[in-house]
Structure formats: C-alpha cells, structure tokens
Image 1 (cartoon, rainbow, N blue to C red):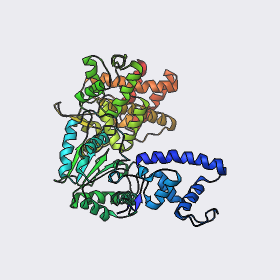
Image 2: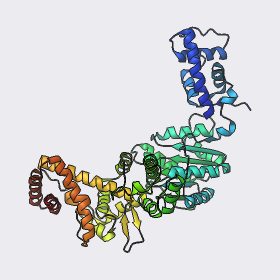
Image 3: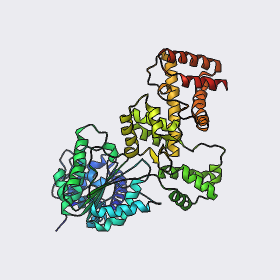
Image 4: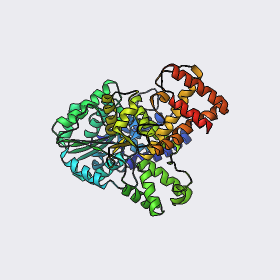
Length: 517
C-alpha cells in the first residue's frame, strides 16, 4: 500500500538544508532579491499542476506555505508534496524520506550521550521492571543522571518493542499539544489530533515504550493542564495495555498513585564512591589512592563531576593532586554549579529552604531531636515531618546517614557549601534591610536560626560555625561599611531593636564578638 504521508529522516533534514541553500543561491542569481518561499511554492506548484500558469504571485499555489515549513522542519506532509519538494531541490525522495523502520521510532528529543559510567544495579533493575510494569517513575535531583540511565535502558530493550518514542516536557507544553504529538507519531502522520482515549488504544494495539522526560516542568502548573497530565498517568496505570511508559522527573509527583504490581518508582541517588572512581579513571584523571578517594567523597553528582573533570584536564592535564591540594579546605563550586543549584532551590517552599539552612548550620551532624529544636521558631513538629519527607523523597536534596546512631540528616558536600553560602548572603541582605528601614518582622534568619548551636555543646562544631557563618557574615558586612567602628555601631542598634521586641539577640552578639577579633 502506498504511503500517504512522508517526513524527512535526520539525514534527510540535513540534505534538505544543504540543497535549499544551494537552490536559493541559484534562484537569486536568476531572479534577484525576491521572496524565496514564493519561488519554492511556485516551482512545486508547476510540478503538481503543470498545465496551470503559476507566474502571478497573487494566485493561490497548489501547496501552502505552512506545508513548506513543515517539510523543512522534518514533519509529516502529504506524500505528493514531499516528492515535489524533493524534485525542486534535485533530491531523491526515497533517500530523503524516513524509512518504515525509522517511522516506528522517534528519539529526536532524547539526550545525546557519549559516555556512561556506573549504574549497573539500577539499569538491571529497570530492565526487569519494564517487563512487567505499565508505568515507571525515575526521579531524583537534577544532574544525577536520570535521562542518561533511561537512555541506556532504551538502547538495551529497544528490540522488544514495536514503537519507541522519547517525549520531553522541557517547554511545559499544553496537554492537548502533547497528546496530538503522540497521536501523530502513532498514526504515522495520518491523524493530526486525538484525545487520551485514542492514545491508550494505541498502547493497547501495539507494544510501545514511551519515555516522558522533564515531568517536573509541569508539576507546578496550576492550569487545567496538570490535572489532565495527572489523569494521563492514572489512565496509563489503571488501563490494561501491553506497553510501558517511563516518566523522568526531578521531583516525585504528588497525588499520583505509584504503588502496585504494575507501577514502580525508582529514586536515583548520587553515584557511589566506586562508580566515581571508575568515572574519573576512565576520563584519564590520575592521582594517589587517597586523593582519588577524597575526590569521590566530595563530588558524586555526575553533572558536577563532569564539569570538574573538564577543569582538571584543561588546567592540570588530568592530575588530581594540585586540584585537591590547593591550600583550601572548601569544596569547589563554580558559577554554573551555583546557577544549577539555584534552579533546584527555586522549587522549594520557604519552610523547606529554612530546614536546609538548619542542616547546613549543624554541618551535617543534625539528629531528629536537634532538628525539632532548631526549627521550633518557624515549624511545628507535624509540619517538620512533612517538610523533611518532601526534601528527601520529592526533591532529593536531603539524605539520611543511617550509619550514624542516632540517625543523622545530611547534605551532599557541594549542596552543603551552596546552602551555607546562600544562608550567609541572605542573612547579610536582611541585616542591611533592617539597618536601612529600622523595622524587624521577626522572620529574619538571624532571629529564627542560631548561628552557633548549643544543644548539645560541641566545641569543634561551634568553631566551624564561627568560621564558616559568623566570621563570614561579619567580613561581608565590614566590606560594605568599610569601617569596623561604623559596623559595630550599626550592629549595636540592631541588637537593641531585637531585644526591645523580645527576640533573642545572641546572633548579633556573635557578630559583635567577631568584630573584636
């Protein structure tokens, strides 16, 4: 049966682009500066209806401009038009068109990956899950390698499916647009639009593997769209079909049932130490056993590790030693990493951010009872449970150190550094605002959080808190005021203001003490 619609393959799109540039040069040489799209439409119309005069630009052409644009974009169009466009460009349409095999696969929105390290356990688990599950959620912090893992999965199981599609929600498309894109794929362009029921029928009719990436981009959508996306997952889970849908998200969707024999969720965490060591050695980095071990403990997010490896290769020709022994005890973090973590924090509520600050102040030594004590100024205990659960299971920013007794809540080293620096900067901004306005709301971080914790007394921890928090805030303030005396005068005014309103002024006292050092 003849194919009713055609689209260009990836190779074909490149050939179209090259031939179009060549043709535009030829047309301009012959006809001067005129509308190139008009010329292409005219020439194609001559092929489609050779007996009609097409010289008058006011005439309607045999094909529309929108069809020409779809042809250039590699989207499906009527087979007659596709062949005519190829003829104008002097291309063999059979070499340009997507094959029947290609038409069953659309991985154009999948990430391009050159290398993949570790994750053998998670990959093996996913290979087993796709055999029995209708719906699988892979979630975890940004940069942890979710899309890379699922891409490896697709490579390994592709032959088990009739149809493969990778769909990205990066641009937060309206739900009808997403459904229409799926309908066009499943119908091979024979249908332009459809609904959720039509798509479910396709999953029932043939064995498909569908990957939906960047689900977190539509989680906060307050429009009707998210309700429809929610129903979409529910339908996939509850309706009988022979396909599998893998959803990738930085955050675990709420109000979506992710339990049962036919649905599973996997939280992807940072790479293990041995996987990081495999990673850096495979990339050509070298150093002592202790240096490599220290590196693997400090840096375990694949996205961040790649950036650091690139720096070490460029600056030190792959030698870890000068990078790890640069005279600084702090964790390396560049502007791109800061921007990356800013994006993660933008998804948090203010209470979740405040909890992150509590963990950072305790320098990854906070127990549950200490967290209750440290957060009582802004949270009740039942709220604390919900927010801690959210930071662990939804945002994947907080983890439990179960090797400690009692249980300890902690942050990865890079996240710890970022959170501490963010806290210091926010405290500084709030102090400046109080100095300028003379008004205290009671929600300032220097009132709700203790810079130096006292329960229990831990002299070593207190020294680190003084160095990383108190002294750092004092230094930034001094840089702003230029004069130590001027800074002390302003801090004394704030101290009086805080005490007058019945708040604890110990943090201001710590800053004043730092001025005396």
